[in-house]
Length: 457
Image (cartoon, rainbow, N blue to C red; front, side, top):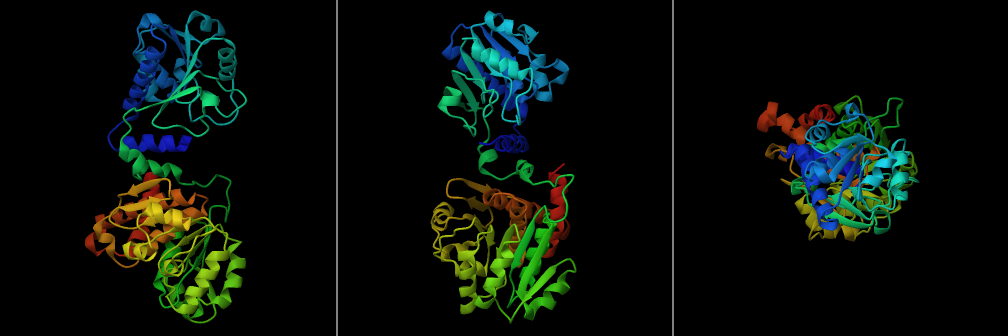
């Protein structure tokens, strides 16, 4: 788990009715139990920082005999950051002191609750001094969740690490000593299902960013159909991509442009995608952060040949949807990619399970359905957002555009697929609240900014 994964899980758990305070209390209980089991009767000094890692320490110390526990603070009590950590600080009955190196000699075990997974950059004072003092003390050290300073030049070297929910990135026996993974009651759905916490993954533009830095998407679509490329491109813009350009046959250029004046279009010769355009498209793809290929292309023989040629040579991250999927059955992809099949397309690709198909094709699979399933062959998550009213034509194009827009903004294929499915489903729910069963794909696309506004608060 990455630090962001941990924050996402906590937020998803809260949305499922399990507040962070309960998880913190369970983490403290697990930490206290491990201490009592490994060092029975010990006197333990909990050295606590200002964040939730310190809160885990307060929760653990509050469960121990006050005669055998002490808390050393690395910050002023007023600097404790979260309400949950402040709550467990308020119920402490053991001695509380400002940290000093001399305190370490008074206890049998040092419990490192200074810095957790949220730490970034160099370790600052007084945390750095504590880490150096603890490592030089000769006392047994137990770290809560991760050793403070993990991955930096000033890292606690514990004998035991009690980590919560799952092993975190960078953890090893060499850096953490013995590792115990504690079950703190994190709901299964907080990990396995995409939820509101996943909005924390959305790439919010920086204050000093400018045009083109937040996603440049190339859409190769259209021919027999002109609505699909427009819906894909429009949805990508609505999810926050800066620049989206549609490459479509000249026969449908005017029809696509009439759908929305915000669409940028480059016309390709003829009435369908053909191999003659692939050289130019490959050259153009190098100027974009992601490519969406497939919607509305049709399945003529020369179009399928063109798609196969492009996909086999392109190295820009791709979303492959609709008719594009028909062209690549049995292909193992080289570039990072997301495939977005419905059940029929999934069967034609030869899929037994999303995990198996992902491994076969070396791509993330987003299997669309009443509940979407996303897999990269190792991880699998389910998205349950959405409504049965989203079965109309064009909603798949909205999803493909949303995923591609997020991919162009720098998200990984797996995270873009998960969050794109969630945002599209929530947009469908928002559209349903006003349009009921008469909602259409454009209604869903128009609600994407509302989902972003509410989810990023």
